[in-house]
Amino acid sequence: MPIVVMIVIAGLMAAAGLMASNLIGPKRYNAAKVDQYESGLQPTPGAAGGGRIPIKYYLVAMSFIVFDIEVVFLYPWAIAHDALGWFGLIATMTFLALITIPFVYEWRRGGFDWE
Image (cartoon, rainbow, N blue to C red; front, side, top):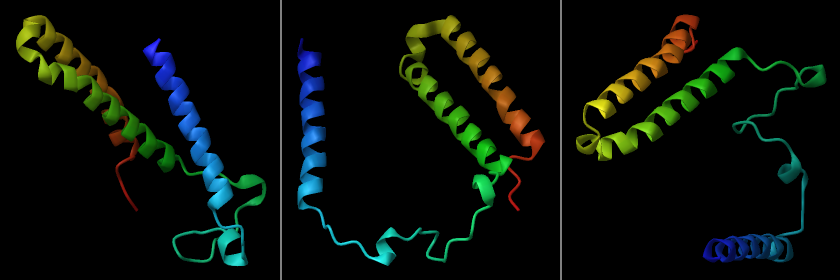
């Protein structure tokens, strides 16, 4: 029951924040506010149909996800490595070996080469 109460309170606070922002926030829009922003420069026109996104974008996203997951899974092992013993060490080394495969794949495909 306490978890349900916390979820309801969080939902009410989120809704209250959105409503307050809508009521209190500025309502005057000008051309500069609604114009697209691209690093302080005039935005480049996109290709018809949205254009194609380079594969490097996906490779960088993939490497972020791989390393993020690796770090999250290594935290519990780092905290309790004494209690896990040899089984924990072997499981962690297996995990690191498996997580190295996408890293090597991306490296060989040129995902870390910046132009």
